[in-house]
Length: 160
Image 1 (cartoon, rainbow, N blue to C red):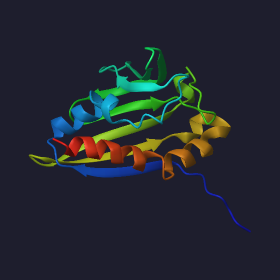
Image 2: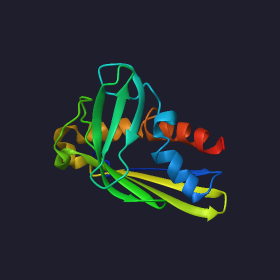
Image 3: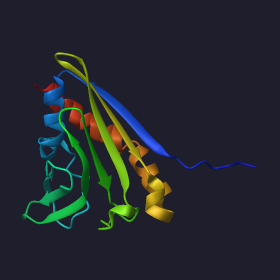
């Protein structure tokens, strides 16, 4: 008999050749420039995405026609140390406006020197997605998930 274990969190980390402040800035203010354009849920072609830099701020995408589509909200905004936001994208790739039904992403920026920062990401609380939680966990942990996304971030942060 095989027992399937539900994934409780997905963890990924990269080390960038940038100060802690720059690593945070590229991840947050610069997210529209490095986030993979094929990773979107809005109806139109994605031009970029953004954070509103405050607790309670939105995390959202912007399409080429200017339409906006929410992805979640900022729970913790502590530059240059960490950001925590909800992931309110359900297993069917639709946004759910109820933050209680969204998982949570925490990104920590740990200085390892003046121009070297370890960026640790944890995506957790998949159970909040209800029956779709396992599907969301599987998707963000597969080869096109957080590892792929952080690869784009790494390239941008290391570009100087």
